Amino acid sequence: MMMADVVLDVDLLEKCDRKLRRREYFKHNKRLHRQQDREERESLLREVQELKQKIQRFSQRAVARESNEETTTMLSWRDMALALGDGFRTTAAQHEALKAQVAEYKVLRAMMQAWVATNAAVTTRLDGNVATWRDTTLMVHPASRQLGKEWIMKRMYHHTDEWFQFHGFPAIDANETVDRYLDFEFADGEYIGIYRDQVEIDSTLDDCVEYMHATMLTLRCYIPQYSPSIPMLLDQEAGNTRQYVLVTPSNEYVNVLTGEFRTKNRCVIVIRQIVDDEACVGGRHQRQRSRMQWLDIHEIPGSNGRRLKFRIATHMSQSFTPEDGVIPLEVDALDFGISLTTCPEYLQESRFKSTFQRNLSQSITDHAY
Image (tube, rainbow, N blue to C red; front, side):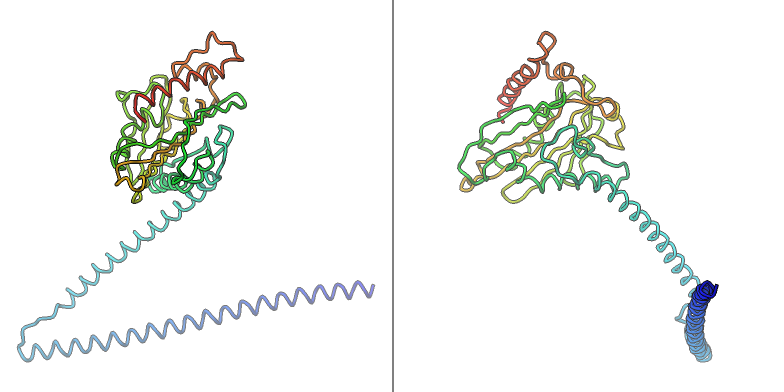
């Protein structure tokens, strides 16, 4: 019994001690607040006294001018009050505008943090099973949308040399040739097309860049059934980026974002399909395919800017819909004019691959490079 009483007394003492500390804390805060209030009141009283002294001086000057019949050059108190009132209202309006802008920036920061978190991973095999390959997104909010475009393009540009090295290209100044290569990786019922090439051409950097943009949709993106007569749903330039949105006759949704990065003797153009675009909702229900491409153009030293080395690395996926997944190969092949109807299933992949290679080689020959 006596031990229990001791424990009970200790608990009670601890509770009392906590209560006393809490009271002391609140008393301390109240003392601080009272001290701050006193200091603020004293400061305001000093300001009042200073203003009274200024008013007295101005009044004495006004009386002196009137007694000497001088021309009044100072504004009246009414005019001064009106001017000060206008200034106050202007300042208050600017303050409210800044508060609204800060709130908007906070929302934008939160949106971009979430966006970057879902798009930041770098992958080596860009297939339909990798979230950052399929789930590249742009928001509808204007500021975050432009930041998203710049981030996607700059990130691709940052990895340019790494990706060419990954695809087996030698150093740009190496005296080595790179054979044209087109292959398809089939896995889990879908393919990824991989294309690379390197050529030397007689052209200026400006002319070559202009040609790249002129053939962007016809050859660079290799859009099946594309024609310049297809109406553009969006063709928008912003800074060094440009976005193309269209739907082909076979109902393939194309939403391509491009970015151009120029230095003195080099130009890199990066291209990527935007799979999920909040401003263009059509792509959520239509077929589309992932695209990712680097175009790298260098002036060859000693050529006086008249000869270039051009290299390209491209990835393109089988068509799919975000809702239903990958489109069957025999249906997808029809987009490229390849019929697999009479082909045995075990030969369809090789037939598609060989026919696609032949058609692409002819297309490149027709366009020179």
